[in-house]
Length: 384
Figure 1: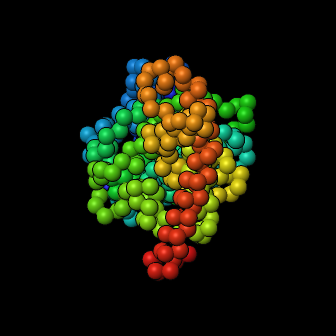
Figure 2 (figure 1 turned 30 degrees about the vertical axis):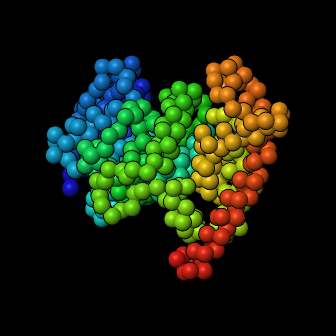
Figure 3 (figure 1 turned 135 degrees about the horizontal axis):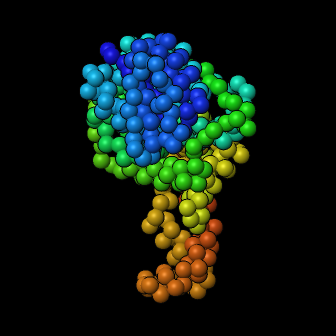
């Protein structure tokens, strides 16, 4: 196995040389990819035996990693290990990744940052938990730090996956699509350093990059529930989605292994269905996550059950019920007038119908989940 350390950089000239020197101290093959920086970071590497590449214009962190992967293939490398140029990661942790690569060459290895250290931003803590949840929902796989940039990638992954993201969202997409393809996801503990808030430099754009992540997670979640299989790079790893309304028994069996009782899963499912029936347009998942966290319910079960309320069936039933409550008759005319110009009235009727049908659907779902969970436990198919 031939490993190349890759350091993407964008306007971190002040910290880059120290990071590269530490990387060269533990491994001789290091590549720095400048993603269109304006502070000329490659000029700081004079005298160091390091490989360099650059983009004339900023294209994104994911694009820099893809450039490095192509160059690594030409160099005859089998793996790349990426780490950030801002000094957050300690290259001295590289041997941990090398050991994992030797033990399991086709695995992606993610470094789990130690968040017990000082100066960890609250946004990083929240972002990690949020991203971890989506990976679990979309793939059935669990990692402790899906947002860590200190990772080991087998180059075969880049050659076999269709990756569309080129910015920060790239590091989320590659984990999800790799898991679907059967690529093992592994993790190792790593050190992390965060400077005091006044000295910290971040190029993460709160609105733009969060929007990209939201759109990506929406796309990946919708793709995860579709019935056709994902393309496999490794057979038998079981990268298919484990929690989906399309596979209820398998989903409940998976959730039961997380030390959740039938009653807890049934409650979470009921909450997910009730909130999913309400007209919380574009806010369903956030509402479900908030309520699940507040009442300490299984978030994956709640969001998974809410898929039953995806349009058009349940919203249409709620609108019909609400219309009947208001007018004593069912809505039979479907037109631009009734669904377009009278849109606010339909939302009101959707709410009325959801308040009537939501509890019924929630209780029915809870009962079905409870019965199926009890059946699985009694039949010995899962031990809780």
